[in-house]
Image (cartoon, rainbow, N blue to C red):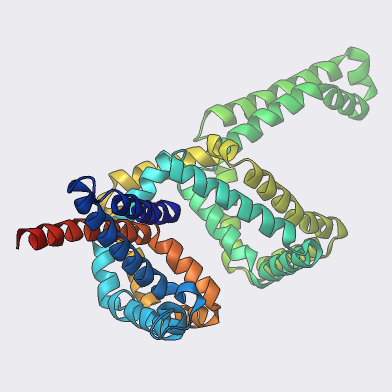
Length: 402
């Protein structure tokens, strides 16, 4: 557009020369000359005005030119103050955030993350995550993760937690599948090892029982009785033996919570496990496994979104759109967070803007502001050329008429 504006100015100069040479042949050339002459004046005047904003025209130190470079510090301060007064006040932020439905927007993005903006965000987030994970000191960070995990486990008394979990499981009958599975396992184990029962009965039976073969009959009866007992226990939730097991679980839950000796025993077992070399090696590998998994997910975010995590995020997006109460809670939280950030960090943001502009050199300020305004600067020159030409024609007509 700069070339177009300059080319139009040169075209007016050429038109002026041609019109002046041909002025005696026809009166219409006087109108053309008047248009071209005034257009040159208008184009040059607007070129001077536009150029004077950003630099010295023709590199001449004309007063009141290069306005923006000379006043960049004041512009930065004024811009920062403008942001502080009209954008970063808590009242303005609260009013603006009150009109925004962040929860619905997040819900739409989570349910349809593959759009243009979502794709760019996913790719940018993926690159950032990869760079962060690869730049970290893995040994030091892994040691920090292990130390933090071990310290947290050491400080947490597990016995009451286990007791409450067991008590809740028994109260809600969530222990029944475990007992059912244990009964089925015991029945299968008895069937697979019945020869051991027979051998034990045979060894302990007297010579008369072995001679008469009654030891085999006794062994069969014992095996059948045990099998029937376990089967009835698995099928009947009110079986006396099953009731004994449940009573034992409830008693263990109480002991884990309230028996000092049991709690101390659990703590000793916990400490022994933490100090076991095998456990320490496993904990040491936790961070590396997590890092590798996160790096793999970051390299292929689309694959991650197609998996269980993606399905969970899409379900969260649907919930955010369909649950007004949850949406109001999230929007209120985001609004309060934004207002709090404006109140707490508004001055810091203002200083950052002001100091950043002050730190720019004059060429950077000129280049960035000129690019920010864009083609409109050159349209000013084009419009000045054309409007000046029309004004010149009007003045010529008035002059001829008088």
